[in-house]
Length: 138
Image (cartoon, rainbow, N blue to C red; front, side, top):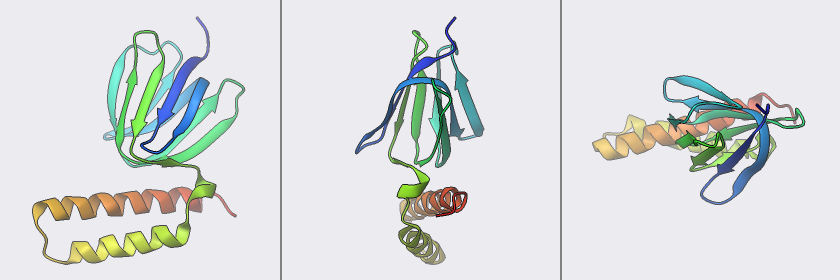
């Protein structure tokens, strides 16, 4: 059995990765999950957080992703569909801080249930972006 698999990571606005990989670590709802070559067919919901791809050459590609899902297909390839994905160096820290502050303010206000969940999701996205950006000194 080969030690690699085909990995396709797609966000709404771009293809983030499309090639062979040794592993991919994803932020799942109940903790992180890592897929390796030969993984059984599986579907998992993804939440905001750190995504790490290890390519077939051993290169580590860290990123932060939004919510979505991943599916390990019967041919052992893996499809990841997320609303956003970006490398740490692509994160605009000032904008992420502003988004965090906006979401926190919205949560302090009385809102409908839908607005509350939208604000919680915005806060979660901003915090994941800030956490990932803070790992890498510019």
